Image (tube, rainbow, N blue to C red; front, side, top):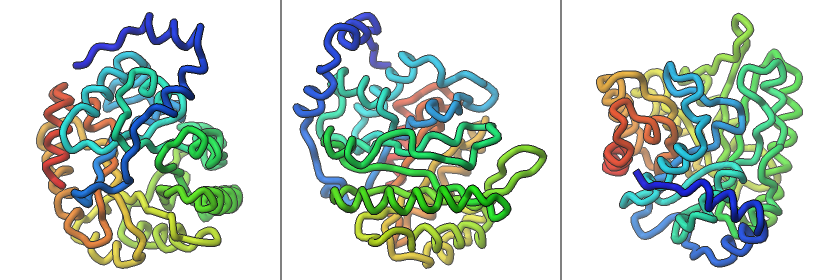
Length: 296
């Protein structure tokens, strides 16, 4: 993988913090959707929610230099359009000079820490619309988890709607990732049934004063045969959420086939995939990325 000099990165951060904004100003930008008409985005915003596990490795994403090296390797591959991450990671990548001609998506709400009692109180503790505009980033992403038994979900809905309004005011696209959730045994469980995903799409599509800049980030349902009907719920452009694909080559192959089928649907414009490409079962980041790009 591409090597990252941690001493040099820390030296710049220590002595020259203005380098971040200067690197952002120099970055060569591109349209959100290029000539190919498809998007392949690498996601790496998990650590800021305390979600560091990959499979049975509980702290796999905790080593920042290792994560940056994996990201650099992925971003070098042909067909990779960009990256989704929080400010700390995106700024490291800016300083490393690997974001030219890439789509840069800032993660906006990271307050709902994984496993916390307040996990559904998902406040906007990451990028604001004004931050993304100031740095010349290309889009934002927010997570919208709704539990019908949790009154706090209404606060998240309200904050989400206002964030979409603010992004639209800057003419910045925002990827909304909606889920219907419930508490079970003290844990937050995501409902990936066709009905739940359909309902979440309908709710997310109608938020804010305009949907002109809203994209959806949607999981493949438990039964992939339901996806055609599910995606008829909205005319908003959508990307597929990758998620974890399992601990074996067979499970990985099944996940890829689910993505392949869903990518044929008219509203689906691409993939946003993180851990399954950055930490593949066989350790071959470049190979995993190339396989995912091939699905497009």
